Length: 288
Image (cartoon, rainbow, N blue to C red; front, side):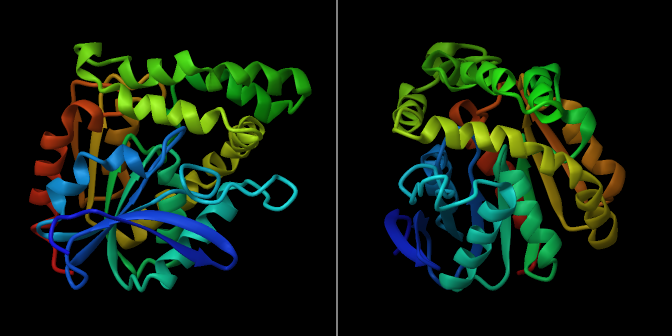
């Protein structure tokens, strides 16, 4: 296969999961888990930079990208359920032991896998993927209001997060030059967000994000107990996940390293080369 990226779908207990893959089948595996409101295409620049040494796999989460987006009557959109699908996905495609790269929503997804199967996760790379209260900025205030009072008014107030201009802002805020950010990623994200029914699915996930915060103590206990090799590569100007959240990993895990980059939430849009270099140096020290 070499460095060429292939695009496949696989049936996971009746749900179609789309994924990108590159690298030799027998190479050490790295699972890339995307965040809101994106899909596996957010890794389009990173995958070729790792595929010469690693088997790199980037699935689209259920309800995102090219994976199935069942109706809310057919699938309960919670992070527990999304993680269960990805857990089974790894089994279906034959991943045994692997490193996991988590970003945004990918963090509570991947960390659920790590807690459930610590023997399978050989290393974790977190790019603006949070597991500490101090990592949550004031930008979460309207979402927290919905957690505390799931009224229709509080739910409707969150629709601003789904607006096309908000997606663009998420990509460009905190970058040194907005013109350095390709429109490809946010344009595709906005296309997927505009699909019928996608808005209420995303609002359901905003509401369920409180389940991730409730699991922070369990995630932190996992770090203390298993001390996995851990690399935080963080856009320091992220409006949602603060650098304090990156530094906090070192409190519970002596094997945690932190590298901050002068960019925003979608750090790969501007710093894919630098992050790939950090990952290669980090994973190069690990036997798996």
